[in-house]
Length: 450
Ligand code: GLU
Image (cartoon, rainbow, N blue to C red; front, side):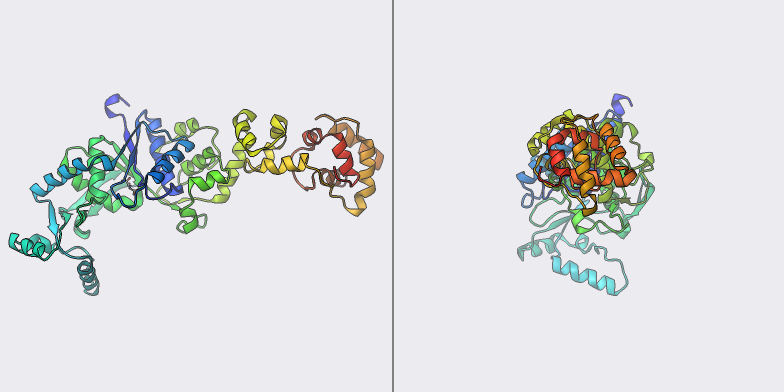
């Protein structure tokens, strides 16, 4: 793409809570699209709600995005731009497309109930448009402060959605949106449009829960400028069962996943692929995810988020991870055993913290797990164990045990694994034997603590 039509996209979270899987997916898809097309990924902090927004949440979401590898090229906060929103509101007021309304929440509620009873859609009746200046003065004298609605055209708004194709929202079927509350504060709708114009956003990529909103926002774009971004509305996340995300999954935060030792690349591999035509598998790097990204692959069916799949991908990634990439975190976990331990067990971990279990099994004193009928066999195996062992000792020793005892297959192998590790499953035994050493191995085979 040439510089003039280089994409500019934004991720616009509200700092009123933690980043969860749903909004991380939106962030990721914006980021992937920007990177794929040499565009700009802009982090916009939607903090117009001064009461609910906090600096701590803002810091948290920046930290989470950084952890995930989603670096932004530019960032700004809506709370620094109230003057621009006021200016846009003034322009709309002057043109008569932003008009004052005086109904209380109760009155509106009653109106909607009545409409429902009459079988009509609960759309705002535009009563305020017929108020004279005197009426308004009288209402204000009563102590009422106006809230402000944008006057929709009443015509269908159409656009070619990057994901959903041709879209049409009949603005006659939706209420004129409130842009400014009675206390003077802005709802999200207008600031978002003003920012998208000023930041020259080329693609608004967000969840399909915003489709109706886009119908109204397109008319606001048109009222304010010639700039109109493209829209890409992504299908929402659902749970593994195809139903809406459970409350727990819906609010599953990056902090929780980090605490559970889930790799950021596993999260991005899964969230970048669900709901697309690509296979859902671990990807070795963010570069590969970028390379593979295309909106053409995004379907309209909801994207299934399955925690079990996340764990599977997490394990797959670790199985290929070199020691240098995990050394610091293993040190922080207090795991000893260094590279040899990592290489011995990485194919058997789902999460990095599973290494702690293997470290305990190999290096903490414990008794072997031996069935009654295997006691003598294990003692024989202990007697055949060489004085010192390395990774290559397992094969010849096993052969010697086989020859001496006449056992083979599972009956040969399983009692030894159990006696040495206490487990029925696990990594290859050669490296484990070398790590635990001959003395410990002998003690455990003899049913003693070692
Ligand atoms: N702050 C809005 C939200 O989180 C942004 C929506 C948008 O992308 O326009 O829903």
